[in-house]
Length: 122
Image (cartoon, rainbow, N blue to C red; front, side, top):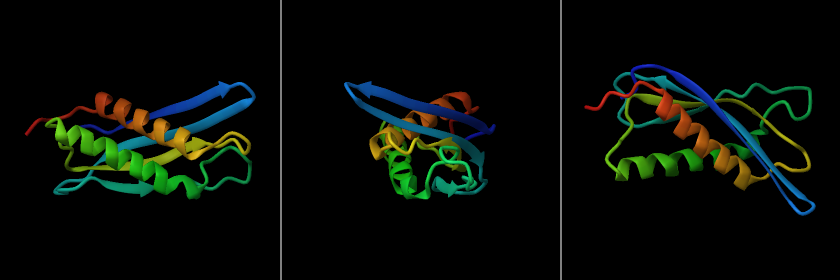
């Protein structure tokens, strides 16, 4: 159970030869009392300025990364309940953003958020 809200982000920026890969996710864990399953919410506000927000086309990849990571935690004995993962921001690069970078960024943002949250073991 999460006893305090936490908001963290992670940015993946990698260059390999002439290829650049980029993904940036901001994630917040929010308390949701009496919830048996972790929920997801997309609260990324659209922006008129390119690169300022994550396109919603990446939402399924980000949700999948979070769900997979939560399953890993559950298998190790840490099942997160009473919490909602809110994707609250991030950024985008039109030439470099790709699904794998958002997957890594979301996973790391979740890890940082869980480590920063005040967890109660029940």
